Image 1 (cartoon, rainbow, N blue to C red):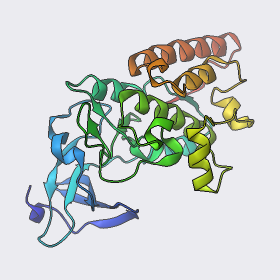
Image 2 (cartoon, helix red, strand yellow; image 1 turned 30 degrees about the vertical axis):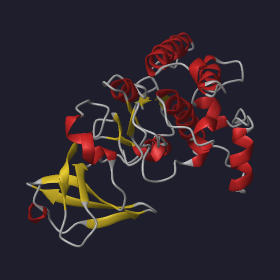
Image 3 (cartoon, helix red, strand yellow; image 1 turned 180 degrees about the vertical axis):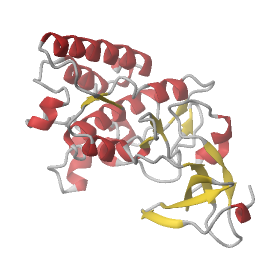
Length: 275
């Protein structure tokens, strides 16, 4: 892709590993990520085609500058911000595993390795799409990305130094659900990161959130089906965690039952925010 096709990008976010800009290419609004790590999406992004994965359009950039990764612009921001702006709606998480199902079903499987709500963007139709493959790896490939994983969302075996697996994505998946439900990072009460790193490796898991927001978004009590699924995703033994397909099927059951109860209680008119 020729960088001359882009308008002058406007910076909208600056992080530790990338600068996110908004621009226009061929009359189409696009997201422009100036990356300072080798991105796995640049390696196989053009081959990914799924409604729950952000479309990757190509790479370009002026000489002697950070490379540009060009993707479709997602007008509703990330999943956490979207849920916050739609706090009056019931958040339906049943669609969330679909992107992981697609990635994990590739041959060999593609492992995201850096799942968090900021890496799940919402398009104009309200559909959740996974993005940011800078940490992604291909199963059986020793390369696990060029930067450390987000600790608060990472499985204990990853923090121990093991390679990412599909099971570690599922651990992170449950952390993303908790993040969206509570509008807070996992383990938000822990400020000392070195101590938190050790505690997670020793078996610490998130506490059940006691808040009205969490209750309204499906975590009604520690025995509810959603919390049980999340805890299964946090199992200390990776092989005991559900797959993305199993999580999707369980989510569909959970939200089907929730809608049925809402109809019986006379609140069936509530709009669902699908994430």
